[in-house]
Image (cartoon, rainbow, N blue to C red; front, top):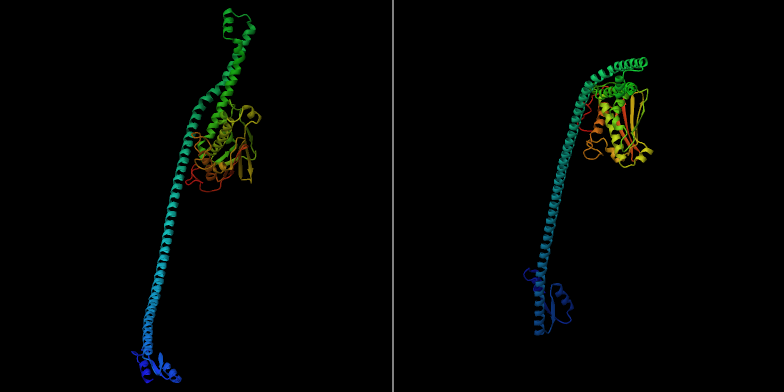
Length: 431
């Protein structure tokens, strides 16, 4: 037993298998031998072949154990290596995930910056386009204002030049009528006292139709007087409409401005081949006296609205028969009234074709027109809107129903408050 104990105590010999010999009845010795590390025993008397077989078996078992231990060691090392590889892989995956997250954040931030840059450039482009549009609009307003100013000066000049000879003609017509009446009276007395004139006088009187001249001369002079008065009224309307002093604020009779505009448009209101005359109904508030405004520019507003109403009616006439128009004749109604003691309201209505709400919402936009190409510039109502709202501090609204007509409502302060005013209704930037 001592030999077995020492073998098992040494590091180099502890794995050597020990087989001890014992008697058949020595159970205690068997247990002690096993407790000291013996792997087997043989009983006395021993058999050499058995001992060799047992020794060979235990040596094989020992080799297998050693091999198993080596494999276990290798497996443990492989497990350790795999764990380390897994740790390294997890670290690499974590690093890769972190890199992906970092890159994602960088890309997101870069995308945000790029989007901000795109939005900024789009905003700049929109502002540039708006500025360009506003500049074009302002240019059109300025050009139109200059045209109206030049037209006003020209009309005023022509009216002045025509007014002088017309006054001369109308002034002398009264004398010509008196002279003609005197001559006709003398001729009548001559015929009464000398009923049988010389044959030459009789033949000449018949040749020139003296009797007809006696009846028609005064009528002709009266017609000339009416025509002259009509010319004077038109000249007065032209001078009032184009009044150059109307570019500044002053007390103006709104009704005179409307009447002068209607006088100028009278030819367009007359009977045409495809329609009867357009009736104009005027409902003026007698309490609306003078309004502090720019008369010339407000006349331009009245002209634009009334001309558009006539255009709409004439366009509608092309789609209707004359009998249908006569059954429901076209008319334009102009109403004025005083509201809240300091507000003048002018409404211009027609029973033309009307238009949709979508068109109404855009009717005052610069360059927007419902007319065919070449028939409208699209700035008349835009200029009117600026004149009423920007220069006079009022409002201009449009209300229309398809098939029923259109109404323009102008509201103006009767007395202007002190405030900065746009020049000739022109404002950079639109409404």
